[in-house]
Length: 349
Image (cartoon, rainbow, N blue to C red; front, side):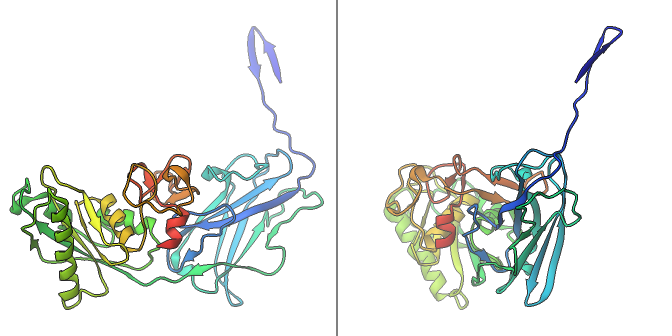
């Protein structure tokens, strides 16, 4: 609508709502690290998650209804939250690629326990004039039993290692800067905690170990890995921990990291990404096919090493975190980046 007064042109936009809307939520899921649209990836007990409700109408409208989510343990509501509209309009189809295309709320890991059930109520205040065929409750009757998976506490022990050819003196080396302030919330381990099915997490730092192997040769790396594994097996409380021997790489290093497949010992540079990659091997993950790694997993389901499904990192300026695009992001078990974890490896680890 436009009008002209005294030579000035003004434009006004009018939002008109339909007389009725067929309302539904075709998809509801909780995402921790990665998730399918239908929510088929089991939830890790005790790990925080983001609840996404994809509410849609059968035609464009500008209503801004709320959503109520209620979590049940038995017949008791253990957690309930009211979710506000993320947009000034109601989408007509679900879109997993943007957080503002769904109703979102963080759900504490304490809520996600075995046997937890969920009920979603759409527009409980009845802001929208409903058309026939609307479905304002998910599920329509009863409750949705969430699929959960219990995991053992993850105990990581980092071993600072001095090796021949290290370019830094022992008193002020990069390795001690990296291991000196390690805690369960330290930046060095956050990536590992976020990508893997980890709930309870512990980390400590062992006393410094000195190796004499030559890390410019692959055979030296194999010997180095065996030495750190011996520490794990002979330390009084070593069994039950994942051991990571962190070493400043000498010039001309043969590798950046090395880990046993299916045994909880690995070694590598002081890097959050190398740490997570090698721990993946310890959790029986093989390489994803990107960047020319050795022995790639022949059953990896996504060509090019992509993660395949939308990932989620709770960190981010928005306060809700950020999504990881499955057409852009590579799996952390590849040699490519940027990287996150695929649903395939999340469920295998």
